[in-house]
Image 1 (tube, rainbow over the protein chains, first blue to last red):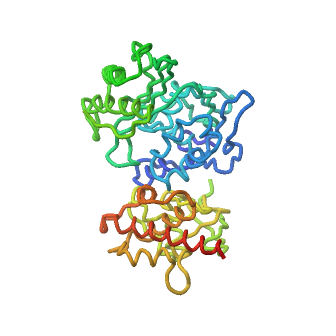
Image 2 (tube, rainbow over the protein chains, first blue to last red):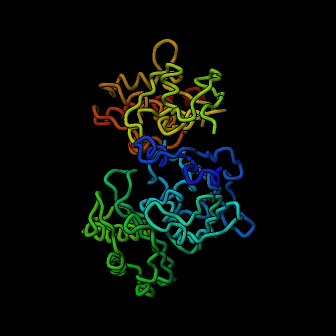
Image 3 (cartoon, rainbow over the protein chains, first blue to last red):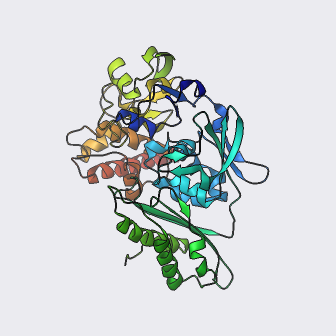
Amino acid sequence: MLANSSGEAKVIAGGQSLVPAMNLRLSAPKVLVDLTGLEELTKLGLADDGSLAVGAMVTHSRMLHDGQVKKGWPVIEQVLPFVAHEQIRNRGTIGGSLCHADPAAEWAAICVLLDAKIYVQGPSGKRAIPASKFSSGVYETDLEPNEILTEVVFPPAPDHMRWGFHEISRRHGDFAMAGAIVGVGLDSAGRLTDIRLVVFAVEDKPRRIDADVSHCLGMTFDAASIDALSLSAASCVTPRSDLHASAELRSDLVYACVRTALMRVIGITTVRQV
Amino acid sequence: MNKYHQISLSVNGKNIQREVPARLMLADFLRQDLSLTGTHLGCEHGVCGACTVLLDGDAVRSCLMFAVQADGREITTIEGLTPNEGLSSLQKSFCDHHALQCGFCTPGMIVTAEAFLQRGGKIDEASAREAISGNLCRCTGYQPIVAAIVVESKRRTTTAEAGDAR
């Protein structure tokens, strides 16, 4: 159907981004192809190698309340309550969010953080795309017009790492103006051995900036290193300017988000902004 | 491509069969075809929550769903949550707390809150506030709505405990 529609058809998953766009007449596809009937796209489970295979049509709510996800990939449970609101999470899907490729979407950031592989399928077969390569810009992906996203596979999360998340939006559930998700590993002396850091809603797509903060490896994980790390993060991004926030503000928000996300790793939940 | 679809679904416990245009939204189907006008349409792009209905028990926005997508599913609207005579206990609690003024958001609030209460998680002021964060009210300032939900959840817990003790 997609192949025969000469680009006038659109795939609909949960419809929580596409239908608002259609209601606002920003999008007017002639044909909608609903994936709801494809049962294999709703599968959610562990593969033999311990990775988590998530069908494209699995909803945010299902991921948020799934016991295996909570246990093996706890960062997902931290982030998902910030994906829109309950009513949207009950319909919206992981595959839909990734294909929509909004730079402020939390799913794309989670996938980049956890090195997920994104599987897509079309008439010429199935291929895997690393999460960091899937989005190619604002609302743009590596998908061909006749391909659909079928599955997202999360490799086992390193269990020595602890995670923190923070995003800043005008109201809870709105699109973030900036956000950060961080994972840190510490040795027995409390020194940083691993850092994974993804910043989203800032540039055209979420980006891992581990290399830009790697000079903090080996430092004791304390207020000074948290500050150093946050400053490096803020200085290595090239933020967008839009209606919601200027590039300058976004750069400050990156500092605040990374700092708060790192504080959350050690369980500090209220942070005085400086 | 089919411009019309035959659908069969349950609405408030009643089985319904209809032919619907492919482009018809679920909210319009409920209001216009079934005359269930308790479901309100505010923003029509998923922000205000006035159109919230239950889809197989989960709160969803009926303005972001096509009627054809409800084929084979179970829909509950505010009419389905209201007894034939009088009001539900949650609705009474809304009245007692002055949790509505103009009433436009109220059906969506009640449907969302009912799904929240039935899910049975931890219910306190913070979680109730979070639960209705996808529903906009321009009159009340939310405090009375949150209070109505929290008090109703306490009442249900007490009633359930009294039932267990018996």
